Amino acid sequence: MHFTDQFRVFATLPSEKALSRPRRLVQDGRVTEAEAAYRAVLATQPELRQAWIETFALLRTGGRYPEALTLAEQADAQFGAEALPAVLRGAALVELGRYREGLAALDDAAQRDPNLGLVWHEAGYAAFRVGELSRALMALDRAFALEPHGGTLHLRGQVLRQAGRYMAAEVAFEGAAEAAEFPAQREAARAEIRITRRYASFPRIKPEALDPARRWFADGGGVPLTSGSGAAPSDAELCAAFARLAAESGWRFSVLVALDGWEGWYDLARTLAVPVAAEVPGGDLVVPVICARHPAGMPRWMELAPRPSVTRRGLALALHQPPQLAGADVAGIVGDTGGVIDSAFALIAAEHPEGRIAGRTLR
Image 1 (cartoon, rainbow, N blue to C red):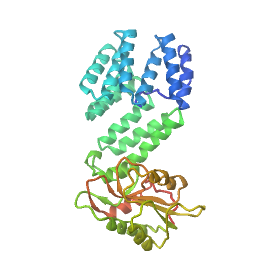
Image 2: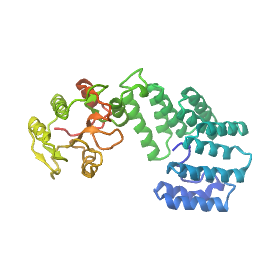
Image 3: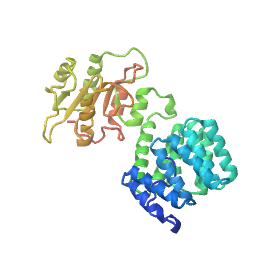
């Protein structure tokens, strides 16, 4: 979400009292009801600009970009030559990937009202999407000067991180956390701080220059056993690398939970000196390592792999990790680009204070 005031619940102006109910519904996660409530406000008070902004934000957050564009066109019929319809239209076009048209609409909005902070916030986001980071920062600085909001600081942090300016990005996210009105905003900013600190493990290297395994670590905090490019190691070699990492880190598991029938798990279990099971045993003292070779499309992985992050005991190991698949704490090969075993970085990632397994019971 990129609008700066999407979390506001209580009406700040008498004219906005009608928005209290849809805002509460949004906060409660009752999106369908919230949309109906917003639509009712638009029908009875079409002059209320904030209602158009928040309805647009609701559609945008849900990925309903064509409907957001339709709403922008309806706003144009209501407000005509004002800047707001052009801002909404530009934002919708950017989300639809029609960047040239979106930037043109935002430029038009800036000419209509150069003192509207939302214009420059959205212009900054659009420039960020097309990779014009310096332009994005200038627009966001102007947006913040006109209307200080934590959402603009949050977006500024993302731009700075993409530029490889990790310390400055962390400062921006810290500001966003301090400016947060609600816990969800604060936690979102703190999550970005953790991501930024992981990216800072690679000073002077921009995120786009990192290989998939290291980006996977930076984005999610998981531990990759390989990095770079080259002929991919065998599954047995990946298991041996995991066993070495466990020994160097002092991990002591109580059971290996195999989610597939690969016999290599028994070799790994012997090395780790633990039994093999098909399910996670009960008990408060269990420290499992939950294992799968190819977890993509495996329902039991989606069910069992998140457990260690919830119980804070044990971890989940995937030998072949699709970058967007959740659950793995340690991965052999990330994506399908191959890589070579990198035990040194695996140890660094495992010990990183902002990693996924930081604070876990692993012995």
